[in-house]
Image 1 (cartoon, rainbow, N blue to C red):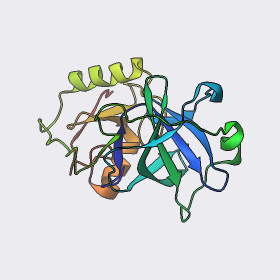
Image 2: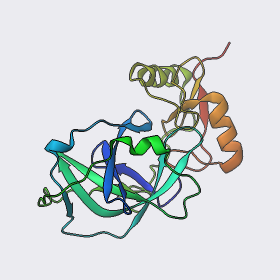
Image 3: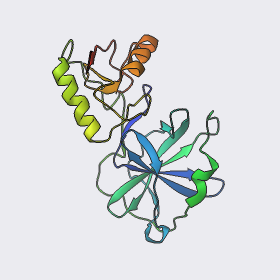
Image 4: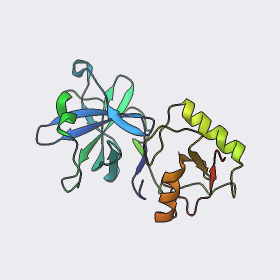
Length: 210
């Protein structure tokens, strides 16, 4: 994720708005990917704008390993049960587009709700969520294995390759993020930053060595 891009939404649901149709499609965040989420339009309330508008914030939505769709969040949301669903919109100049099949379950919204509480709709990096300084020079291999093993048990994917995490093929950075070893080595050679928190010059520990 690039600096200045949204790091964390207040829930695992977002809605993509299509202005020309005035319709919405729902995405659910599972592991490290945004996936389609089936939702019943009959029980949806509608759109409201936050009482304290915040500046437009850019978002990159990863549909698969190849497509990063450039979008923008404007502080608009609606309620789905008890969940706040942040609305985003694809930028016209995005080099990638959502596949046409993505719009197969579009819906509209017609009623209004008040903003629930004062919690922010998202957290930004780095302004509101600075990357923590690495606590260790290098994580011991036995600790790295336990971290990757826990990620595997929770069905997490590598943030770079989007392949399922396996302790045998993974490494852990000293900022405590898990990646496939080949993917993180290539990423560090290219940017010298952790792809998740952007910590500079991360030190990696292979979870398993022969």
